[in-house]
Image (cartoon, rainbow, N blue to C red):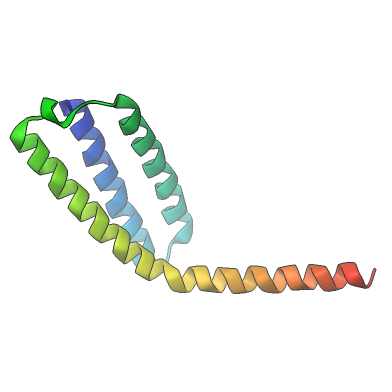
Length: 106
């Protein structure tokens, strides 16, 4: 793993912080945009396919710190997003039922 891959981890960590801030503010559009950015960064990182040994002990420790922070932020984002997701599911369910009723009586 090179410094380039550590840069990707840093970038993913930064976007994760943006996602958490958006979730805390209830800014779901920004959260979704940031999640798409994060997914693209993860894909690029996975495409690098470099061994951890290329980074060295300090880099590996930094990578672990970043990953731990991302996982903690992800857990908080999920907790914050659950009520919104349930509300969205309810709304979509109502809309689906309304379409079904309209289709039945056409």
